[in-house]
Length: 79
Image (cartoon, rainbow, N blue to C red; front, side):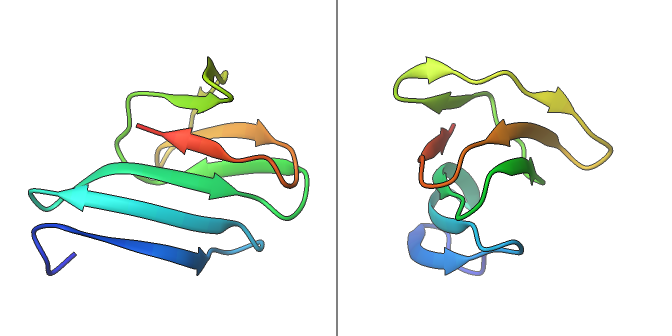
């Protein structure tokens, strides 16, 4: 982002996933993803974990980042 700190809420990514995110010092600080349909989500950003209701979500590495299986209407937190 052009701003060193900030946030964006209600963005809709490819496939209809709603994205809320915050960044600090020009880097992603955290994000919440809420898919509208069941399926695999791929995140193209460096992150240390994905959680759902406080529990870790199993991820798999991809060429561009990580992917995980997601359920519609659930909110996944990225950190």
